Amino acid sequence: MIIQKELANIMRLPGKVRGVVFKTDAEYIRSKEGEEGLRNVQEKLKEWGCPIPYLEGKNTEWYPIGLRALSILAAKEVFGWGDEVIFDMGHAAPQYSFMVKFLMRYFLTLRKTYEKSPEYWPTHYTIGKLEAPDYNEKEKYFVLRLRDFTLHHALCPYYAGYFLRIAEFASTYSNMRVEERACSHKKSSAHEFVVRWN
Image (cartoon, rainbow, N blue to C red; front, side, top):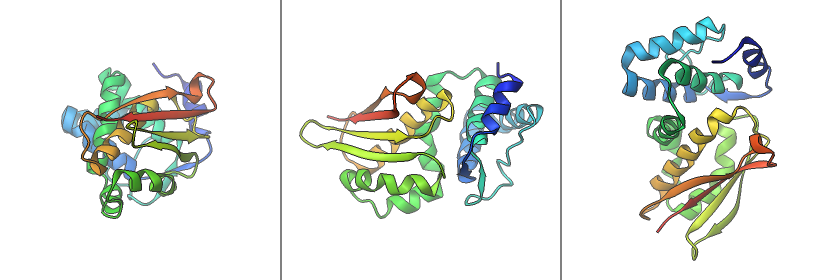
């Protein structure tokens, strides 16, 4: 259960996030739990004193970064979701995002998508730096490194699912999978996600 001190700390975090992330969260919550489920999450956020404009907000408007974490934390608390569901939520998010669909028209291959991914991150977030340090076609993997982004550990499975789905959109490879091999919440200097394929 989230406590008031933790809420205050999250909301004090510097940085902004685009409103589109809340639209994608709302679509996923509706698909899993229906309209009533979305209302229950909104009520939880109001109870915490941090309402999110899931449906009223604008996709391209900037909102406090802390709301990004609280959206997921509220859903976890209301529905008892574990990391597997949060991973699935991240995995589903690109299919709901008009920004992803727009950008993916220009990134036609997995390598090009990978190389361009650091430019994509700031279209959604004002903090954090996404790096693309290692793409190995022969050994069938690539690494994404996310620096200066310690928002909340509950988001780690979300981003793992998100990065995997983007890779799946951009490739024809089979059996793609992802693991977070380093985490800034576990004393690493950055998050590192490794995507592999057959």
